[in-house]
Image: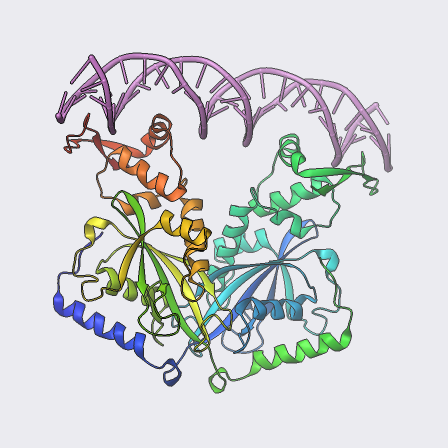
Length: 241
Length: 241
DNA sequence: GGAATAGTGTCTGTTAGACACTATCTA
DNA sequence: TAGATAGTGTCTAACAGACACTATTCC
């Protein structure tokens, strides 16, 4: 750790190389392509789900991959991700967050592609059947099922998408306690149990409801509506403060 | 929030555009250039400092910028950042962390450049005069001085580098309490006051030393060495556990 | 001794986890 | 009535901030 480069020859070589790259006219040299991949989450079927696409062509034909596409010359990566999201889910105004940029030269066997990965959180209620009905290859997977299958080696994802997925999960788990991302996955009005389900799915563990209630209550406002599913005592609906 | 696209015409147009971008042969179309910018921190002169370069050429001639360079066609962005770091500081085996990718089409007035920003933490003891002595345009700025000047509008950085800097600060502040980044800025053996200075500089606030001591002590091992600066009671040197 | 920095011990208010209990609905 | 989910109250252990105090050095 912290070794100083002592070999002057080596250093000079490095410097020359660097100066060359810094001063060249970038237009003249070969460039990597830039794409985005997007990890889209929703809450549905009382679990956290992620959208994936079964690939119809090589490479990784038949494997699952996150939706993605190239970044146009006049758009930001955010715009490209947003475009992709609109195409797959048909939903606007969703939570979109940059995750990480993946750049290993051999990550795509076809050519050099640098991918800027994003994560999106959509409300299931905003999704309709239009999205994906021309694409039988679109799948919503249970996040914790997928995590288990990856852990057991029962499934492989295309490209480096397993690493992208792990980054997304890590980000979700890291932020759910002290940001408002949980609210991005449910309706404007919700019961505390619904909110708790989101946390439980993200963290993949059961929470004690009295304690959960106590910690989230300061961020909520009561409504005068009650749940009407008629299964047991009706839960009150709340809104974000 | 959460509006569903109702205009079918609009949707079709979006789909066509997306399919086009997804299916084209990327090699045939114009691509953005990809570069890295790197925010290098050190502890020196009992403050946290950041390395910047005074630009000798337009655009932003005379402005301060972070060192950076293009990503080669056969290297990852990490490798490019590492190369840049080696060129500027002459130090190997440092802490290097990806920050964020900046991609607004007009962020560089010359051409379309997407920048993958990195943050590096180096030990001042590993730096020698060789780095930068052919470059009078290399400056080590006090981080909190720079933050103040930016806040007051007394200084402008080149390109979008103010945003890059803010990202780096945010990351440092967010991680210093629960990761080991503070140790990356000081020697293997250090006094608790030294460690405390790092925290104080990153957070830009004074900490109470008895409480600080208590919280870091479980992560440390005593050595049998003492500080010899002869200013007051000698402090014990510690190592990371 | 006084100034300066290192280091110890203690009090207090906040918070998270565990858990016992009550409330209100369906069937 | 039992079963299920909603919701309340309380105990405790861990922890962070504040602070009073002691220890060791230089001048």
